[in-house]
Amino acid sequence: MSCTMDEYGAMIMRLSDHERELLYRNLAIERLERKRGDIEALDSDWPQRVYILLMRYLVGAPNREAAISLARTIPYNIVMRECGTLKGVEALVIGASGLLESLGDDDYTRMLRQEFAHLQAKYSITPMRATEWQTQRIYPNNHPLLRLAQAVSVIRSGAISMSNIVACGTTRDLQQMFGAPASDYWTQLIGGNTPLAPRIGAMRRNILGINFVAPIIYAYGCSQGEQYKETYSKRSLSLLTTLPAEDNRYMAEWASRGITPNNALESQALLQLSTESQ
Image 1 (cartoon, one colour):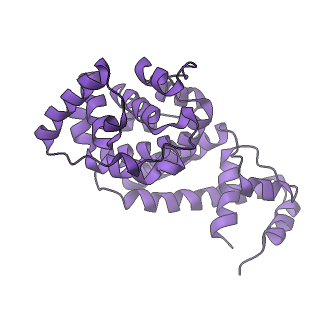
Image 2 (cartoon, rainbow, N blue to C red; image 1 turned 180 degrees about the horizontal axis):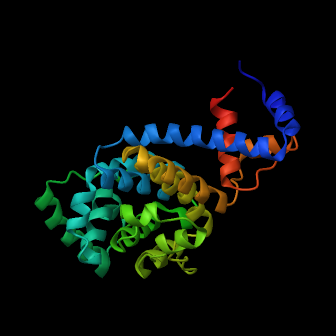
């Protein structure tokens, strides 16, 4: 039987610390199971799934669908073929996004356009339209061009290999995983007179930890059989406990009822209760 948030809130407040911990753990697993289904519904190849999810959660909500479309326009195996040089993979990603044609004319963009013309013919790429991306009323540090440049750097660093992802267990691991900086060209282009930080910021890293790394660890463990499921489930939940709780309207609603999550596992549990358990 479904309950209102007030009824759930009153129930949670009556629980002992141990009972509340068990409830949050079970709800967090429910949420990971739902995300596992979403991940398995993506392309069947694990590297491609990881690549799609990286693009989806790195660029931010306004450009989420465009990022997924880009990840399918130039699949991961093609990106990896061109990862030997920065100019090659930047030309491939920025060119296929359609955003390259929206830029001004300088030495770097001319070089990228020339390189992309070669790659477009090589891989029979049909570029997206620049209008598919939201670039207005976007904070500079979340501009799709900067996010795509950061994605290029992260991919080239080898950080999103499955071995690196399943070994990620702390905020320090996240910092290292997403620490590769975008090239100076993009930070200066987007930032203008106030160049932007080239690396993915702490808040976005935490979002990636919650929505990208932890669900992949869980889903990948489940796909490897029962002997791995429990180990990877614990690792995924452990990572969530190291990350700060999310700050959104759902958490504000819980706070108004006297319930404040201590970490991302608890905020994911409360989010599950808010959105899918009523």
